[in-house]
Image (cartoon, rainbow, N blue to C red; front, side, top):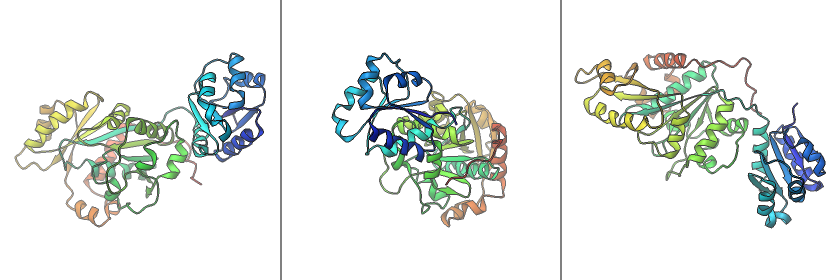
Length: 360
């Protein structure tokens, strides 16, 4: 197993604590107790944890500036931590024992391969009530049933909650408020284990009550972890995405815009599409039939100047199924899951060559 972290400290208490945290993260770590030992391995490990006792010595020894350096202090050295972090060129400062959970995450993330695998798609509606959340949930369930490791992300804090669509409001697990303030690199495995799941679909949604603020850093942290741990990420966005939503749009390889076949909906969707094009350049149109006035999907696509992915037939069973918490059961057959099969196939997502490691 390749070394994940270099622990540079002559303080046995810090070394013991960090080795314990590395074991909890299933990360291989080596300890350098002298400046010369640390200099030898300085560039070899993805993560370097420098004890405050060795910061000045390493700086005087001329170690090169690099990413992935964390200055670690005990409570006694916390007051001088910022100065020591600057001296050694650390990007983060962690204090023991308060930041143990963060350090476990950093160690677990560093132990993961850095090649991004997931395909990210965004879904939004041309007007309110267009059906973007139902389509997002159906895409997620369909992909998971195909064997793709799938994360469904609720990117709309005022949308009512994708957990309600899936009947998962009482399923235990983390929600956005638990993750929005996270800093640094998040472990994909820990993200997966912390989130609720419906069947095989992993879900990140919201708590009930007042909407929490989600900044762009929170969305970036979650997507950065998810792209290393899933095959497909689906982000359900509002029509007017905030900065966090725009992070998701820029990460997406494709955005689906669902529009009812109605004149006013098409007019509204024209403005939505124009705003989305500033952050994503691959928008595919989904037209929801039937049209009360005879508008065809082809005419709507020409009007919006967007490629037509498909038409979407209304399924009258779904609203009542969502109210009763039966959406997952009724989502196995019908025109909408058939459409999702085709949309996922068109994404050309490689299935994992080996089965995923089961969460402990």
